[in-house]
Image (cartoon, rainbow, N blue to C red; front, side, top):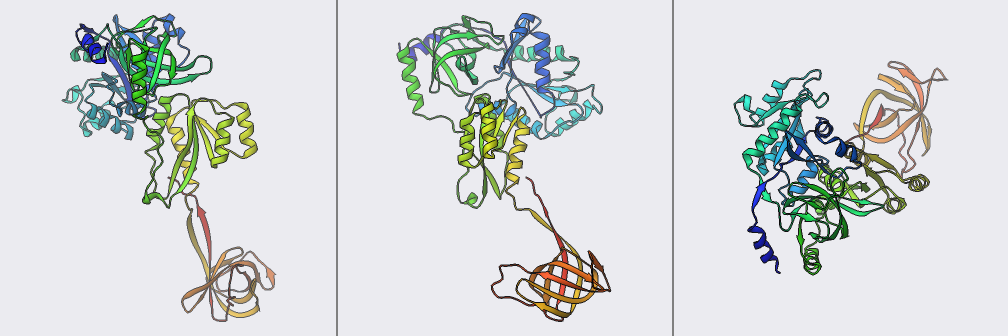
Length: 514
């Protein structure tokens, strides 16, 4: 049967109401994860909650007998990565804003995403029990971003809550279900399954594992699944609690095993009746080519940049895509970064070898470091750091890049001396005597020899004497003798003369950062 005929068959099937799929977005540290965790603790059946042993990228909660699917992704970066591939992933968004901080840069980014995708959303003002909480100020800040909540004259629902105590969580869930009811969400519950890949990771025992969010139809063990060039004969399905299931229906997230070719996060999947048909689609899709991540800048505008090399490892494919999206926000006219190697899994010996070859630093996200890799890195002077917060990792990349920035030189003028006598002349050092006309002379300072208003030579004040005794400094109005040590790279020696003025100063290198 052709794909067109299968599609026609699917179109004739009846649609039924389905649970809403919800994504929680907001500024870092405003409580997205805390809210998701609180809902999971309070609204997931005890047996199911106890079975959750790993992060699969989604879970289902129940409120007043109705299910809600929550996408538990690394934040709006991952959501953007999925969205950039044309996936309509979420039906409803929860935009979290902390009551004690208000609208922040990432809040504004979330607002732009929601406007662009036209996703219905509810504002969750979190941390209302924290010191300095001001929910009205949050409302005003949102209004300034053209987001008018209901009690501020607009149409956007708002809920005040505390993820810490659970206050307002029920109201938030009720609001999500109300929005879902207004949106009248319906899908096919039968026929060939379609949906989105929301998570991919490598399990040492079970091989490649993908979390699939079913949007149409019914996904069953034994089905042939294609996502991009990814291909699987489903040999095992598990729900979010790790319980084996035979089938999954619309809005249900499931873990699927059996991949011969791994899929990519954000790709749309479809099921097919036969291996022949599925393999043909997979091969055709492989010719299109995968989405490129960690693409290195190129072009004449970056040819003079100094580049930091990085080896990057993460726990999942979606984390890598989220990191790629976040790292692209780092901009500098002087320095850049290049990801010379990246992959899913713990930091191992091969990663360290790649770092040695590419003179790179190794950075991990939500991964461990193998013991042998740590020893190999120590022997080869390779830096390895791991993070479990995206923005901590981004700051580390900024720090690595900052090491390549030329330091800022801060000059502090100390004083001036008029040369009254010259006692010794040679190419390495010269000894002179004179009077401090302003400020002071300090041993170890830098000295410019000024003649006719222009500096002709720069040296270092190596020795300082007053009344034939070695001293650390000499004050204004006093006479002194000094030895000026000169740079070795002089082609033709320049000698200090009587009447020259020595400008004495200190220079401090100040490290710059992005």
